[in-house]
Length: 126
Image (cartoon, rainbow, N blue to C red; front, side):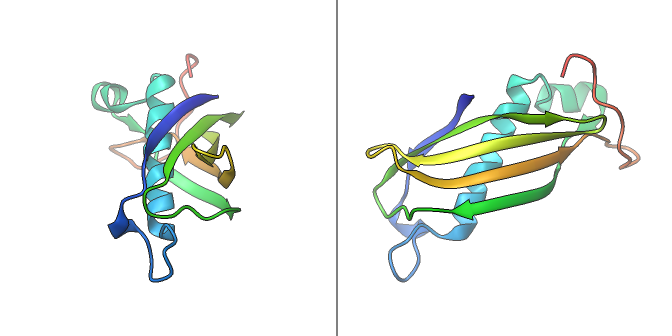
């Protein structure tokens, strides 16, 4: 597992009852997923040089504890599965002050040829 994202919940990202809005949980997971791709050598440099990309194809999210304005959070991420043309990442979002697990996400990403949009086998190094 790596720390893939860290930040503070700003006031404008909470809803009418003071909870961190669902859309922003997804934004933090997207940021975390990009950090994992970069750690695996599949980040922007790889995409530009090889014409390959790894878009999210599926996400399973569990909301366990609310974050509120001003809370500091961090995301721990790791690789759950490697398949021929897909990877599955696991993300855990924590309240950094209390250590409380707030959200878990299983994120599936496909490995695609950018020009054709078709799945292709992952490189051996991944």
